[in-house]
Amino acid sequence: SYELTQPPSVSVSPGQTARISCSGDALPKQYSYWYQQKPGLAPVLIIFKDSERPSGIPERFSASSAGTVVTLVISGVQAEDEADYYCQSADSSNTYVVFGGGTKLTVL
Amino acid sequence: QVQLQESGPGLVKPSETLSLTCTVSSVSISSSFWSWIRQPAGKGLEWIGRIDTNGNNQYNPSLRGRVTMSVDTAKNHFSLKVDSVTAADTAVYFCARGRRAYSYGLNLYYYYMDVWGKGTAVTVSS
Image (cartoon, rainbow over all chains, first blue to last red; front, top):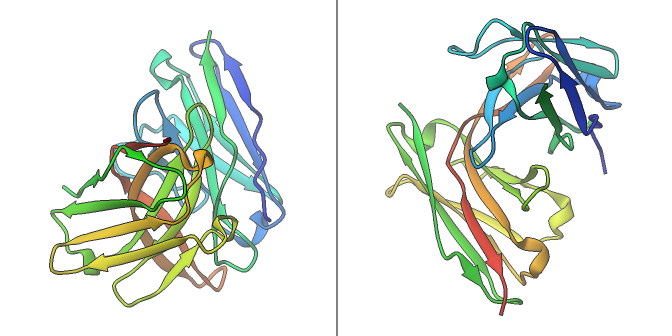
């Protein structure tokens, strides 16, 4: 089955830039999406169609794609950004939704 | 503002059927796709499947045919059934609205979840 691979954890100091990667063979042919999940809450969509932000999502959240790797970038990280982040895409047949394993962002 | 609310038993016995409902507010259920996602405690998200009111559905093949989804347009809700549950089905279950659109650049339909319910915890235990 198709998999998206994320690092289990990323740590960054406040004000610095956090980068969370997500790799998958089908990513060059599929859009990627990112969700933020804080403890005890439902995931929130923060990036769709590789790099677009839903209304209400701060500009410090951005994303880029390069081949089989997509990267969520959080500029000027704030304490409130500490959360789990999940990438999502589709398999190569464009039939099934797939989530990455999630990355825990720790703000030091 | 679109809102989704999951409901159903919090405890299900092994080998029985897990049944959940997601009630949609402020938008017609006929307007979108609808998905179920689950998350075991301390683990990541697992997509269960999606459905629309035209009878189109896709289920995660990892659930091996145990899943059925349905839509009730009169009640503006959709439902999930998982048969023959085991402890591995213990999780928080989320429902979500799916957005689908066509990309001429990629020449495909793309899909993502933009509004989620708060989730409901289901434990499988005797």
